[in-house]
Length: 185
Figure: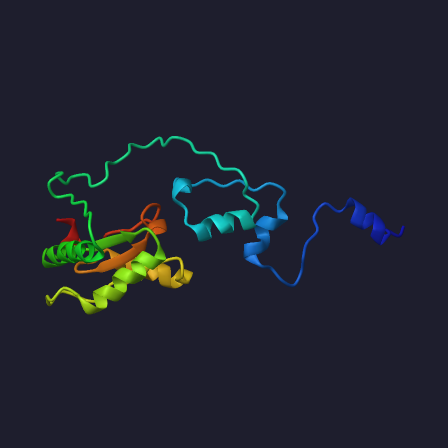
């Protein structure tokens, strides 16, 4: 017998779309999308907008099964410095810290609350930079980078004498891997 197109359409459970595929649109094809991350409470504005675009409306926060590491673990309180004062005092203290760590051959991640604070610091650093031979201009890890460029910065960030300016969204949840044996000491 002859099978009618309407019968095929009615009984067919898979409706393939042929000729094009937009990977970012795949989640829109599902009735229910579930996701999980350990850094849900520290997502950037752009990341939260992306979640909304994929219809993630509810968030559930669960306590971590892993031990929390104290901020500045391994440093005595006398080394940790909180700067209250003007922009110049803040910049000067941070610049001194950067210079001290460069002399030791360390890699540094300097985390900023948002892009405007990072930009202000980066602009000032172009004028008032550490006057030592190890200094080279900092890398920047922000939401404005394309995926390949972002991965490149993450790989290069953990090398001796490297300064990386980072927005808060990369301060947690980004896996920086140290392959430089000079830093492991």
